[in-house]
Length: 306
Image 1 (cartoon, rainbow, N blue to C red):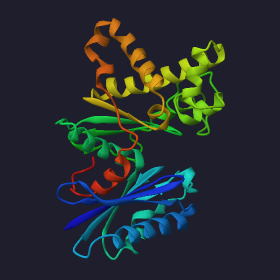
Image 2: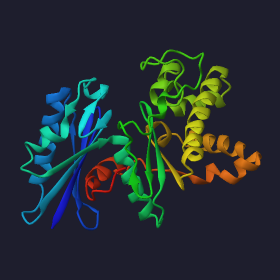
Image 3: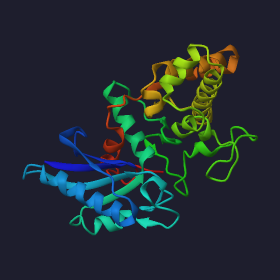
Image 4: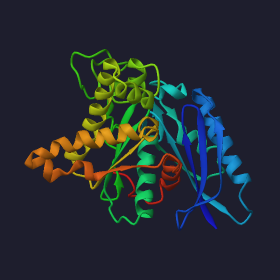
């Protein structure tokens, strides 16, 4: 059996899976390792995960490709600006360095939100969908998106497609670590929530419901910011679905409902009614291995990316 390996390299853990190269189904046990940081650490950690996945395979399974999903900007297999991996503006040739230690197997690297979009498409197909266009919005520590258009992952000329978290949301807002003022990510992300609230999103909503005006203000900013991000994706590209993922929304049903309620206020206009953005939203299950699965699917076809 020919198989593909997929690695989702996060700031704290590396998640590895094996995928049947023909059916694209996950097979065998999934493995997690603690993340190693710094250029050498990221490379070594990836190689160790590949070795662990290979060791667990039966002898008649042949690894034909490895895909890596990583945070940061990815261009031609090199990674920059992955702060939570200890990588800065100096490019790390992750694809080349891992390939050198992977026994000649094809190694492909992509941004982790983009690989999650590929995995998200697989999830939609499991639900019976036949669409080949979508946007995925990841509401994690930061805020970022990815696009699949006509079945192809939109990478962009510099690998920056989907970096919507740094669009200016409030020109009078606080300074963002990127250097701009009032970026959307400062209000609509896990780090944006922690900047204003000492607790979880669920605790924020509970406090707001109990009458805290401070909590209510932060709740409304968080809700409106995420709803704005979804609207940007839907209006900008008119995709069939906007998949939303990330711990902030996955763990908070009240937030998900508030986002949909916010989006439906737009349906009071003729254009908003036509757009019907709330109807396009899908919540990607938190236990679905979209990042690792999408990584395994990288490189399966020369035309997978645009």
